[in-house]
Image (cartoon, rainbow, N blue to C red; front, top):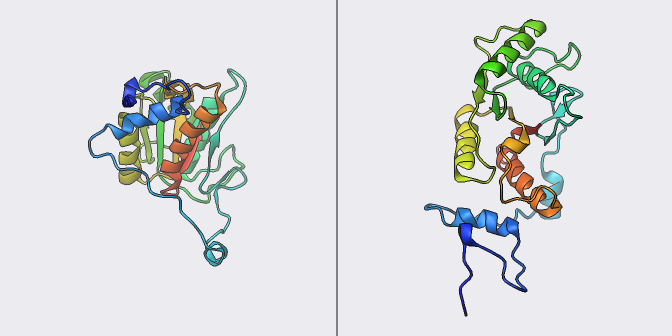
Length: 212
């Protein structure tokens, strides 16, 4: 019996059910200190009925707490501008578009993988000025570095920011700048597993995640 390669050399053998997603996440098993994930959380009926299920808003009428999902739209439809308005609104407590009030203001972490620091900062200042906001003390935390979701660098960076900043929202823009090369975006199962892994990291700490 020949042992199947693991990590970056992992490839499905004939008749093997191993998927590209399995191979992608098997990289983590080769990392020193890796701990296998915990078992599924199981609820009895009494536990399920007693568990908190109060509906809460982060941005009233726009974002529930916690949540995850995509801010989508056609090309050049100002998705990043709208996303930045949401980031500023949550960080400062100022209503978004003068309409959507902030129920849960707090720190925001933004991973901005396109455009660079200087153009983004200029845009941020223009949007803040239009909203009547001063940015000096706003708890907006930015990174312009990129790494694939599921990579050690991305995972360690996100865990650091969740622990140290305790953000209300994590905003990743654009998704393709952080998309792993090994995950086939046209494969629903692979893409779903990658996004579920990202969401679970944030939702475990009751933080919201938004992707552009």
